[in-house]
Image (cartoon, rainbow, N blue to C red; front, side, top):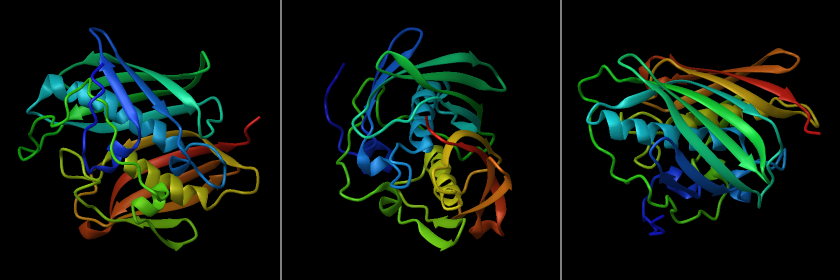
Length: 257
């Protein structure tokens, strides 16, 4: 694997993900860092692994479809273990299907020879003619940027408007190829809003996320609401597009053993 360090400013390059593509899958490695972990749970954010899945499957899909841009449609994540800072995680991502209507991928995360999480992600090709381009960062190159000295929510300049409501701005460091808020960072904004509603010893375990549209004008605003004892629903809207609902996320809560 090429261990060259890429000096990129995009926030995702600070997530310490390296990847090597093979004929039928991509193998990744990452380490859970404290600046990417929740102070409340003492574990990695669920959306951190979602971001890795989005990047690995999306980058591979983009390499096959460019100049057409694949955009994330939905992600389903199941977290099986608490991942604390210092944990080394091995990642295997596979494309299950590339069709005219959808691209489906599966990502399996393991630590200490045990599966700790799974993610399934669906992409579709953007119908917008302005969404075209190429991958600037080649697959197989280590995605290591300069690690920030601040926690992720500070790095993104998230603003807590009130309990369960969080805003994020769009910048050159946070957008994707279609000029919208990157899918994993959107999920993190939703998670940060949902986390503010948690009770003591309650944690966010699983996540189902549906992308209806990109947050392209901004700012994006995540609005969390508890809809059942162990379910928190979050809408992410684009305030610059008359509060258009862009993402619906449901988090299941529970307690780590």
